[in-house]
Each structure stands twice: as structure tokens, then as C-alpha cells.
Image (cartoon, rainbow over the protein chains, first blue to last red):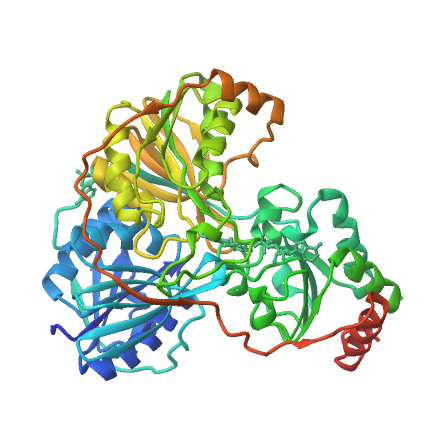
Length: 320
Length: 257
Ligand SMILES: Cc1cc2nc3c(=O)[nH]c(=O)nc-3n(C[C@H](O)[C@H](O)[C@H](O)COP(=O)(O)OP(=O)(O)OC[C@H]3O[C@@H](n4cnc5c(N)ncnc54)[C@H](O)[C@@H]3O)c2cc1C
Ligand SMILES: Nc1ncnc2c1ncn2[C@@H]1O[C@H](COP(=O)(O)O)[C@@H](O)[C@H]1O
């Protein structure tokens, strides 16, 4: 336990350690190298000790096993973390900018009177300071910020750090919850998985992804026709799913699917970090967007600044 | 059910975002403000709950940007009361912790069983309003929610998003604060004529707050636009030229025969 340690909030999703956790461990290793502290991973849950081995890149792994932690609910998670972070006194707490991190980290910071920075993409140690680059406004603005107080609570955007591939020899400390947990006002009932039957976009070679730039449901046929001549399937950014124009199974990104097709064509997608997280590892990325400053062009291999309603039909014809 | 909905203003990302002379903040004078998208969904979710089970909706907002437009629109959609919190700094939107302190004071007077607020906003840098508001109100919180259904015995069922298009069905005993990512339906459209009518008939209630505002503990040194990575090779020409070149690339890469 040292004031130079970097604490990582580990996450388990559908019985597997989440990818973001390996990224956080990768980032934490570099930060701990600079502070001279240790990487302390914290895993909360019930019957989760089996995941200890995959988290061995940490120097220490604290496992808090409690029935009340079996399924995520903010209050018990917060209660445990407040106590644990309070007693560990690390330099920084790294949480993923995820459905769990977003619920817990801001309150953790407030409870500990600690600075909280959202949407962090880069973190560096400079003496007593942490220098952070955060991507706000959908990635259109970078904010460079500095915090001096410890611990700093940092919500890290997925894809920011290189995942650790190390398999270290973390000392595993299994402990009971440091605070008494009771059933709070928020209780888990069941997990609803996407209905099977729709195509699995993670298994496609070619995806034509539509974003809000498609503007109207009628225009979807432009993308459908392109997907058809390419032998691919339609995918989408979240606003399209929220409109109900495609089922949730077609959503690419943080809360949707992580896809790595041979070819990903983004039509009218801005390239917000939450979307990019789900498609950046595609082999070939082509983006069509009217805005030359759209962040999607930073991940694309080929870009076209034009109206998708002109380019998509022309491409369909050219391929035919 | 008595529902409070919190709405706020965020920069329109479709317009260019300028950095101000300090170099460390957005130039508020050059920004087009609009309703935070997830707050719009929070309002829609409130309207849907009211339609299915009755009750009343109070919309609460800090007076910043062009919030009046948003509030009249909310009234036109069916909000029963509008509470506006005076805020004197025109140059700087309130930070999440500051907004939470101010809004909590106003919401306490409303006696709401359910407080709905967007689960995040794209300009939040130092914390997240929704959970901080719950903390200030000393109410349970659950965020990143995609749909809320009325439940049994003073509770609601909320659907919390998880990766892989999965959703956790959660029971939430009221009173509580929910951070909404998306409502059960997309936000409804309301004709301009109804908004105009609402402008004539709606009275805003002003609610001064004397909330102690926490000092910032994060220093913003600089804001800037990301350097284009230069990764993408940009194709130019007529749409047919571009299409022909793209078709060639797809062929070279073996995507099409
Ligand atoms: C917790 C959380 C989870 C999220 N998870 C996801 C996720 O899994 N997946 C996801 O996609 N998003 C997710 N989001 C939302 C994400 O932040 C963005 O809001 C979303 O990705 C934006 O979608 P978009 O690019 O379609 O829309 P916008 O950002 O509105 O972009 C539309 C683009 O279309 C361009 N355009 C407009 N007209 C045309 C035209 N005629 N031709 C060509 N281009 C045009 C515009 O220049 C613009 O760049 C999440 C957000 C949160 C807070
Ligand atoms: N240690 C804890 N374990 C589980 N739930 C808790 C814990 N502390 C508070 N809660 C719940 O969290 C909600 C908010 O509590 P409070 O901290 O009193 O504002 C209430 O529903 C409490 O029941």
C-alpha cells in the first residue's frame, strides 16, 4: 500500500474479464512505472476468484467476494470502493468509461472529495501532477487537464491504452467486504440477451454502417443496396438503433458489438469514441462524411468528404 | 407518479466548436446550444411513464444558453411545471458538481418520486451530473438506462445497458434517480405551432438556490482540436470518380471479385 499505487477497477462481463480491464492494466503498468508504485487491481463480485489468473499482470489483486456483489448495483459497489480506496490511498483510480464505471466512479470521487476526470485518453505522471488528455464533445475537442490531489479518479475511454499481455504473478488477497452490505433499493432481476435470429454482425466480412448522416429511414435503402452488392450486412451507430431503424443486434460500439470485418464502410458516422471502440480494428475502413473534420477520418483508411446519398448509390453502380 | 426531469444545454456538435481567448474553454459566444440528447430521452421517458400511469412532470433546468427554447418545447410536449434556476455566468456552463448542487436544491422542493436525467453529456469533463445529483439528493442511483417500466409497490423496472447488446433488468424502489441513455421510444416531435402556444401559456417558476458550490479540483490547461491523424487517404473528384476508385480499392483488397 503506497500513495504511488495505481488502482484498477476490474470488470467482468458475462463471466469473462472485460477487454477494458486489460487496457487499464496496461495503462496502470506504465503509470506505476513512472510513480514507482504498484498496480493494484480490485475485483468485486461473487464466485469471481476464478478470474484471478487473468488479472495477474497486476502486482496485487484484491478480490472482494460477497453475494450482494454478485450482480452489479451501484450502491454496494460504491460502498466497498469508498472503503477500499480510502484505506489503500492510491495515487489514481482507473475505471473504464463503461456502464459500470460511469455509475460508480463519479460518486466515488465525490465521496472521497477527489478530482474526477471523464473521457481520459492519455495519462502521464509529471512529478506531483497527473497530466491528462480527455476527449470531449464526441472526440471533437481535446482537453488537457492537470490534477494534483490524490487519489485522482479517472474514467478511461476504451481503446486508449495498449492492453497488457503480461502474465505477472499478482499476490491475490481475497477478503470479505470491508463494509456490511445490504440489499439496497436497486436490485438485479435478470440479464436480457439479444434475441437470436438476426445476423451476427461480428461474423461478417463486409459491414455497411449507417450513422445519423442517413437522416431518414427512407434513405436506409441506399445503404441496403450497397451492402447487397458487396455481399455484406448493415450495421449502425447508436442513434439509428434508438430510432428503431435497425435492431440492437446491429449496433457497433461500446454498448453494441465489437466488429473486425475485412471491410467496414461508415456512411454518415461521425466517429465518436463510443462507436470507434467497436470498429477500429476492421481490416479496411472507408468513411463517407460531409464534415472534413469528422473524427471517423482518423481511423479510416480511405475517406470521402461528400454526401453519402451521392456516393453510396454511385459505389453500388460501380461495383455492379 | 410525480416525476422531475432535469434538462441542460450542450454545444451542438454539428457546428464548428471554437476555443476562447483563454485557450482553455469553448467559446460560448460561438457555440450553438441545444438540449443534451440523453436529457431529451429522459423527458421522453417521463412523458411515456405519465401516459401509462398518470402523474405529473416537472422539468428543472439551470438558466444557461438557449434553455428557454428547450423548456417551451418540454411544456408543449406535456410537462406540467417548469422550474428555472437562475445562473449568472454567461461565459461558462456550470460544472457537473456545481450543477448537481444547484439542481438538488430545486428538486428537493418538488417532492418527486422519480428523478430522470440524461446519464451523461458530451461536454462533461469533471464528473457526471446524474450520479452526483443522486448523491446530493441522498437517493439511490442507476444509470446508462434504456427504458423504464412502471413496477409494483412503489418501484420501477429499469433496463441497464451492458456490452454486447445485453440489458440488465433491474428493480428500483422509489424514490430514486435514474440516468437515462435512451427512452423506450425516440423523443417525440412537436409541431412549432404547439411550441408557440406553449410560449404564451407557460409560466416558468424561478427557483433561486443558495447551494454551496464546490471548488474545482481539476485544472484545465488547454483545449484544442485533435490534429487530423492523416491516417485516411482522402479521395477527391466527382462522385462517379470517387466511386470508381473505391470499387478498385475493394477489388485490390479482395473484398469484391
Ligand atoms: C454510455 C454510452 C454508450 C454509447 N455506446 C455507443 C455505441 O455502442 N455505438 C455508437 O455508435 N454510439 C454509442 N454512443 C453514442 C456516441 O457517443 C455517439 O453519440 C454516436 O456514435 C453518434 O452517432 P453518429 O455518428 O451516427 O451521429 P452523429 O455524431 O450525429 O454524426 C453524424 C455524422 O453524419 C455526417 N453527415 C450528415 N449528413 C451527411 C450526409 N448527407 N452524408 C454524409 N455524412 C453526413 C455528419 O457530418 C456527422 O459527422 C454511446 C454513448 C454513451 C454515452
Ligand atoms: N453498504 C451498502 N450496501 C448496499 N446498499 C447500500 C449501502 N449503503 C447504502 N446503500 C443503499 O444505497 C442507497 C443510497 O443510500 P445512501 O448512502 O443512504 O444515500 C440506499 O438504497 C441504500 O439502501
